[in-house]
Image 1 (cartoon, rainbow, N blue to C red):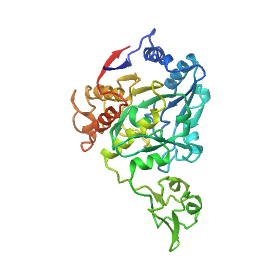
Image 2: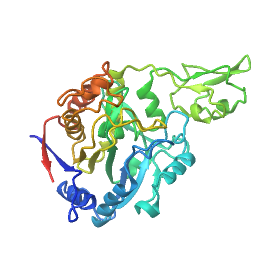
Image 3: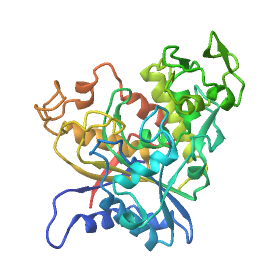
Image 4: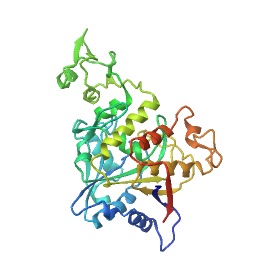
Length: 368
C-alpha cells in the first residue's frame, strides 16, 4: 500500500496564506490522532549554525506549534548537540544560537530543550537489530517525549546526497556518542601541536582512556568507548574526529539511528519537509549558498522514507539554477543531488529505511 504524502505549494492568496496552508496540511495528516491530551511533543528541527540563513523560519514553526496545542499536546523545540566544535557543541551555546535565530518561547510559543543535555551525554541506549549496530545512543529528551514531529529543511549534503527527514532524525537526535559511531569506526585523535597538556580530557574521560605521553594527551584506542565527550571538553580544540566512514555505511548507520528513535513511537511520529531555500549543503555550515532550484513547497507524512522520496522527486522535477553550486543535471527530471555529489548514492538511505520497515519509497502525493 502506498504511503500518503501531503503537499502544499507556496502560492498564496488573501484568503489562503501560508499559515492557513500549514494548518490544512497538519489537519490532512490527522495529527490529532497521534497526539493525546497532555502528550509531550518533541519538534525536532535545526536551529542553524551562526551565519546560516537557510533554516526553517520560526514563524512557520509557530504555526506547527499552535496546531499541537489545539490537539491538547505540550510542544517543545529540540535538537541535539553537534559532534564538532561550533555554536551548537554544548547546550549553553546551542540555546544562545537558537535564541539569536528567533527560536524562543516568545516567538514560537514553545520552549527550547537541548535533547542530549549540557554536554551531549544525556542519552538513552536503544537496542536495535541493525546491519552495523545493535544499540544506538539517542538524546534522552527525544526518547522521553510522547510524540515526535520532525521538521526538516530539505537540502543537499556531501555525505548523503541530500538531507531530509531521515537525516534530521537519525543524525539530529543522536547523542555525541551516536554521531561519532555514524561518522567513524575508530577513536578520536589528538593534534599534538594544539595540545597544552592541561589534563582536562584525562580528568573527564569516563573510560580512563586518555593518558599523557611526552607532555601531550594520547587516546588509548582499545579503552576508548567512543563517547566523544573529549572533543568538546578540550579548551584548545586539540581533539578531532577521524572522519573515516564511507558514505554507504554512514547512511546505513544514520538510518539505524532513525530506527532507534521511532522504535517507541509507533504511530506517534510525523515528518514535515520544507522544500524552500534548497541549498547545496548542510545548515551546519556558517553560510547558506544560493538555492539549486526554486522554492517548491512543504510536505508532510507519517512515513519518513516516503517524505524524503517525494522531496527528491519534486526537486529533480524542477529546472536547476545555473548560477548556483549545481554544475550538472540542470534539466527537469535530472538528478540534482548527483549533479552536486556524483560519488554519493543517496538511494542507499531510502532503500535501507524501507528494508528496516521504517517506511516505503512507494507513495501517493496528495495536494492540499
